[in-house]
Every structure is written in C-alpha cells, then in structure tokens.
Image 1 (tube, rainbow, N blue to C red):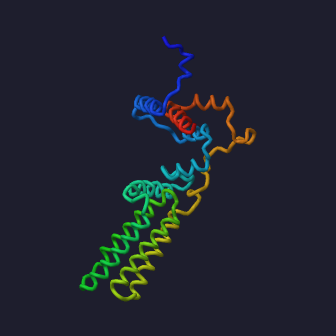
Image 2 (cartoon, rainbow, N blue to C red):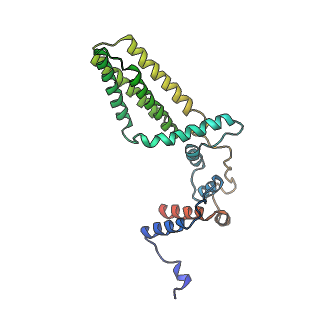
Image 3 (cartoon, rainbow, N blue to C red):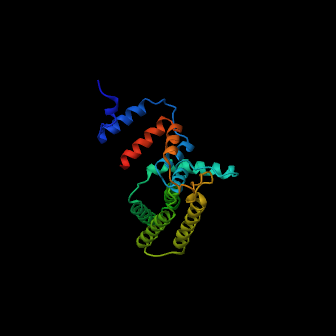
Length: 243
C-alpha cells in the first residue's frame, strides 16, 4: 500500500501534468465556469498585473462601463464581431496581404476602365469590406497604429497600380483614395480610443498598501478555499508551467 505522505513527493513529468489536468477538467460539470471575480482572485494568486488582466478581459468580453448602457451594448457587439472576423484574417503578413489586395484591385479597376467597363463599386465594396473587418479585428488588441499602416499601404498600393496601369494620376483617383483613407482613420480612432483600451477597470480592487501588494500565507489559504475546482486547476497549471 502506498504511503500517503510519500505520495506528495512524487514528481510528475510535463506530459503527466497535462494528462492529470485534462482528466480533471473532463470530470467537471458541463455548465461549470469561472466568474470574473474568481478570475481576478486567481490573477492575484499568480501575481498577474491587474491592469494587464483588465485589458485582457476588456478585449475578450468587453467589460461594461457603469452608467452607459448604450455604449456597453455597442462595445459588446463590436467585440463579438471582432472575434468572428479575426480568425478570417492572417495574424502575420496582414500588411503584405493588404498591399496585394490593393495592388490587384487598382490594376483590375484601371484595366476594366480601358475596356470601357466600370468596376468601381464592386472593387470598392471588397476593399471597404476588408477595411471594416480589419478595424474590428485590430480593435480587440487596440492596434490602431497597425490598422492605420495596413490601411494606408493597401490604398497606396491601389493608387500606385491604378495610376501605373491607366498611365495617369487623375483627380478622381486622388479624391477616391483620400476619402476612404480619411474615413478609415476616423473610424479606427473612434473605435480604439478611450480608457477601455489601457486603463484599469473601476471595479479592480486596490492593492493592500500595508503588505506592498504581496500575498500572505493566510490570504493564500483563504483564496484557495474560495476558488472552485476549475480555478484551482488553472492556478496549479499556471504555477507549474511558470516553474
């Protein structure tokens, strides 16, 4: 028979640790989950920066702002749309992809004009659709600078290829590109500005000044008792992975 005291000294490999956590997770009721309050306690247990936690929460579930129900509804739906379109766009090479899209669109539009065919609106619809999807995706991580760079490169490539194919830089081309880049700039600024992009949420508890933000043994024991099984699993997994 195995001595219970000696079993605490067993050393698990990484594979065994993952298997234990996976098996324990599968045993949980389907409806179980972790509340935001419990997640904040877990973050405190793991010494995760509170501001970083609030920023991550806001990016994933769009934390509500007190006294602003309309803004909360809009932010929540924008976040949902952002999570829907984000997997459709490449994580890497989006700048190059936008440049290719703009270049092909500019060449095709000018080529169709040389054949007395009008392709302005279908092509503009594709580019505007990409711009809207991109701004919703970049809003999740407040990547305003990246969004603006990708937008300017895409429309700049459109203008360059259009002018090169058509053989001239027309006034309509300049106005067309200036209009859409200006609209995208304003839209990106409106969706990514504000305190929700980087400030701590008002509901975040202030650190204990007497302990210097640290956690005593008694506090750790209280936290462990207050956490549910999913919370304990994540605390253990994250601590072991950090070690």
